[in-house]
Length: 200
View 1: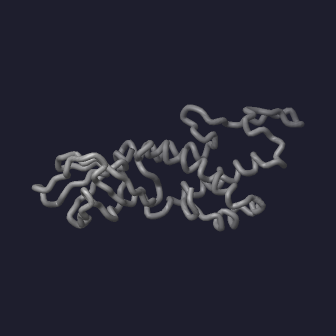
View 2: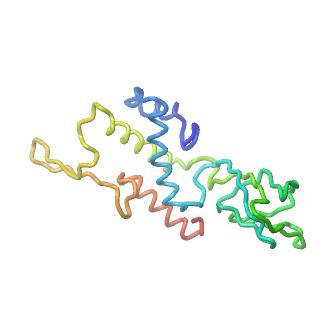
């Protein structure tokens, strides 16, 4: 996770004042733990993510009219070269990671890693507020639960308090990839949207 991504370190520290003692590296590492899980579960390994990210990759020329990028949620093609020759992105159409020339008689030269593409991938211009907030709270809980001052083992599934009551903790598992109920419910809701609209 970079800064900024779903949120900046400054935003996190302002909204979570009890985490002000954690370093920037600790905050980013904890946040990256969740953003990685969220995007893998919602978009799949190569589906992209919630926020725009720059990608540059080399692709084998298919020798036909259709070039398939490694990601589906491509918002902009920044530059593209074929065998070292620049192609104007305005001469191309890109839909769901599939790139074609606007002139149908043009095609992609066959070759190995002969096409270099720089593009932006991401479903939204900025992270949806519900995802941002859920990841921020999960980041806070992860930081606090792993701190030296915290006495509760985060792996514990239940404990009995001094009044005899039992508190149960949700652990990561099938259909609950993070172990945080609010975030897992959000992931499930976006997964349903992804299956309906073919995002993943």
